[in-house]
Image (cartoon, rainbow, N blue to C red; front, side, top):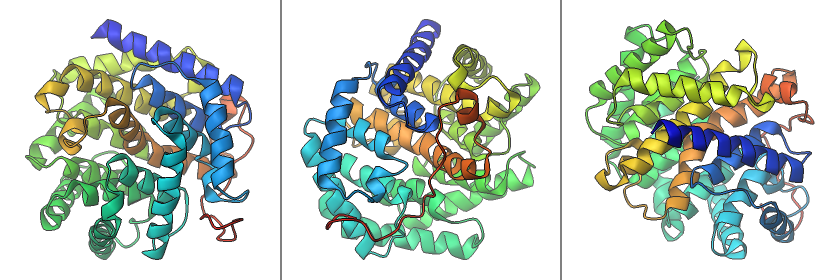
Length: 364
């Protein structure tokens, strides 16, 4: 496993460099996320295919469309990994339009939610999925009105797609939130709510999952490699169902983070530590997921048991574990706080995730 994790880390670094070389004006955080999509399936990034998909995206969307703002490179990567990029973007635009009609706020998170619907083959059931999504969000806003917002949409959409009983899902979330609040888990309220959403996805013994995450978090702190209180800590939820010794997992993640740290894009300062640990956690979780896919007992397999396509599984894994944090960081970077981008020296400023509806053409 150690060799496999090192190979994944080195491939991520290589893929990021290839993508940045081909798309030099893209934000560093999105370049890393796009690289993660290729890395998750052990594939090298194909810049020519990405550029081809960039042209297809431009053909299907207006110049000022939200599809061509913060998440364009992530979307182009998903298109490039699909069998038919033209069909993929067509389905995605149609799905986004349905979400807009369902009064889902238009922003980058809407695109991610639509990608989840498309990737899980639920486009024909969008109305039903949105009914479930709306109900879950309604209950969450009732319980946590100041915390629940668009950054929760990826996880809530997966809950809606998972077809888990809504009452049980919400109950699991609340139990998890109560657990971490009572044990003085050193993370912000937003991160704790995100952890509740993640751990509720796969079902099972929610207290056992919380105990597992709390132990992992404590081990990181003990080894002086702790997460900050930001949303990056939610990635630990991906480890809750992995059948491996907790200390071994933490050591492997720390080693993976050290490998990534050698590349300037992943940051060398203490301020970058949480995000670097998030990437490392995602890579390690994916390695274990690949190794135990037949057992169907890891986080991503439990949540998305209907998935047969490794490409789709890897993309969804990257989206649900990383993009809420990454998109939040992109927004924050407009205030000068995107340290990873600053250290890389290639971020050309963030664009707000709130998108105008005055897009060109008929596309959202």
